[in-house]
Length: 377
Ligand SMILES: Cc1ncc(COP(=O)(O)O)c(C=O)c1O
Image 1 (cartoon, helix red, strand yellow):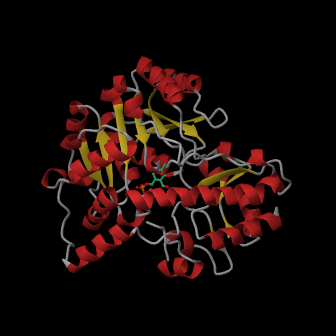
Image 2 (cartoon, protein in one colour):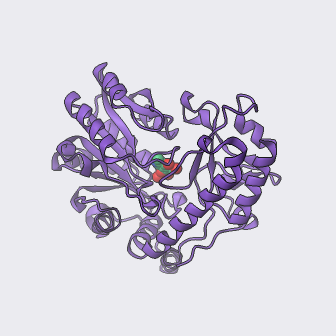
Image 3 (cartoon, rainbow, N blue to C red):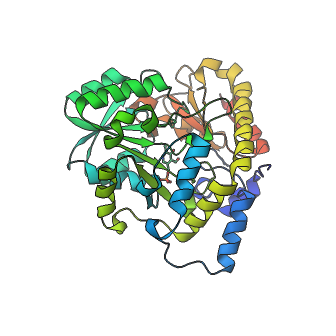
């Protein structure tokens, strides 16, 4: 099922955050939205839902079989066994994360965030009333010794971004095991954000944290959504999976509005994506790999191939421009050529000298983005 990429005019007409925040002279390659038309099964399901006037309150978990659909998708698509009875709906991964943190941790608990990191993790931690503790990545890998030190100094949880945003890395089993070992020894919790898991590139597979560390089932919470793989962020629907009945009971005991259960069209779209989206997703992943090769071909010879991350998942290129002489704000420099990329410092101090380039756009738009970047670099 081939993927229909939207040209610049269509993107501007759709006026999502990515394109509405740039002027007409600037190409948008920043926030993580993909410039794709809806997968046909999702579009059909949404049209049908509108025709049926499906705009009422969404059913709760116990009133629909959507939890079973979600668990079935985790099993067949991700090789991840989760229990449908321990899935809770939420509006966003980030609202679900804040909700989960505030349910199981004491107020003010330190939460370790390997850095650079997806910026809204900080918002979720603050919103939950916890304390953020940044730990620098060792190259692109999480450093278990640094996590251990932070946990030894009183932190009580770690956020694992699996696969990782912004580097696009899929943490290998050994790394997850090393994190699990220190978390277990320190009696801490893991919150595993696996929203990019279904976007691994052909030949790669995300190891779900709860599969890597079954001994931590009572202290692991997984967050996921169809929003990233199927590009549905505006529909506000995600889920929280716990791996232990007692943890689920604590989460489920809280009022449903504390987590914001999401909307009915988000449920409709997620169901269509998870049931009928496999062929589209396979084609999308091929296209993303091609887009990332375009970046490597265009920029590799200008800034050196080692300055480019080697993503194994998703559509973000993490680029180190610190060896160039373009100053200490590379995103601002590139903006002068008419391309908006995300500044590396948005992801933490470790992102200094870096930018994050979103490659998920029409190949003609990406070619223009790369031309503009090449000429200014
Ligand atoms: C790692 C990660 N988690 C969560 C999200 C956003 O999820 P949501 O919009 O459901 O909060 C993103 C979006 O880019 C992301 O990269």
